[in-house]
Amino acid sequence: MRANAKIETTVGQLYYEWQHLMSKLSARSPCLYRRWRGVASPESHPLFSIKRGAVELWERQHVGV
Image 1 (cartoon, rainbow, N blue to C red):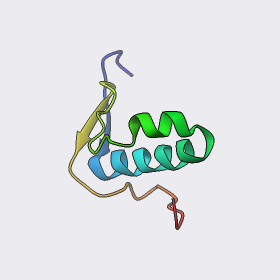
Image 2 (image 1 turned 90 degrees about the vertical axis):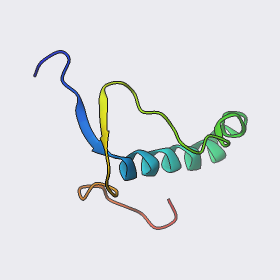
Image 3 (image 1 turned 30 degrees about the horizontal axis):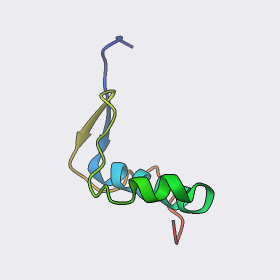
């Protein structure tokens, strides 16, 4: 893999991961949760290339997460 290669994923996956993180923070670190809960549109790390689309097909989605 090239050093500057990007990992492609979907905007749906990005939002899914953000909601998953926020759910964990609300239980484990309420202070951090309050700090970040107002972020409606999280930015991805530059390593990722975000494309349109839903949650990735490989993601195991859990009800309530």
